[in-house]
Amino acid sequence: MKSNLINAALIVAVLVITSTSCKKDGWPCKNGDGSVQTEMRSITGFTQIENETDVEVIITQGTEYEVKVQAQQNLLDEVMTEIKGDELQIYTKHCINKHEPIVVYVTMPALTKVEVSGSGIVTTTNEFNATTMSLVVSGSGVFNANDSIYTDAVDLTISGSGVINYLGESRNASAVVAGSGLITMLGKGNASDTGKPTNLDLTISGSGAVQAYDYPVEECHFTISGSGLGQVNVSTLLSGTISGSGSLMYKGNPALNVTIGGSGSVIHVD
Image (cartoon, rainbow, N blue to C red):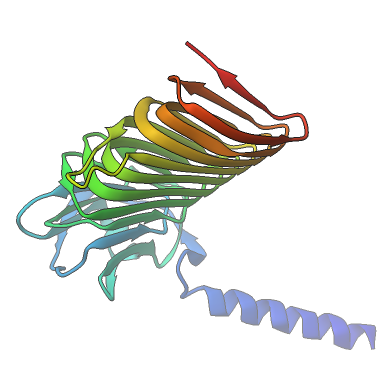
């Protein structure tokens, strides 16, 4: 009986390994071999990008679409760039071990969303203009904005230990950290012709942090649960709740409407 159970377990294990070998990031793993080469990909019609790998993706706003992959010769076919709806998905056929840096360069007319769902890096190189923008990191990945992103509304979301370094202007901004991740914000709330105040909604659950001293807004609403830290710069109204040992530190002289439960704190800094 025990022998039959062991044999059955081995069969299941083999089936699992076999079934994952053709999946994204599946087995068997590959090592890079040969010189680094560049391959052009004929892909158009997308406004969103998801990086599911540990490779670097560099995005530039331009008038035409262009996608090129830079990797060692035997790994070019491993790096997949596929369109699903209006999203460019970047992933690998199999896991990749030792290799030279792999970089995917993307030029596109419009960008509305970036998602980093692996441990890779996504960087924007120049100014981007959009009505709305969503930047999402799930896992340990990193998003970097090397130049300003101008939007009416921007959503920054981290689940895990990742990092978002945001540079830009937006009338409405949302920053959400679930886990130990970090969001840094540089720029300012961009007032619109409607006369509505610039606004930042901040939510931290866990031990993560949002650093936004250098992103001044008129109004900020926050919710902090756990041991998280928020740092904001507010001129008119600061409202929110803290439950747990978290802290909210603020610059400016806004009116306060704050509820604190537990050992949390709201601290004014110069």
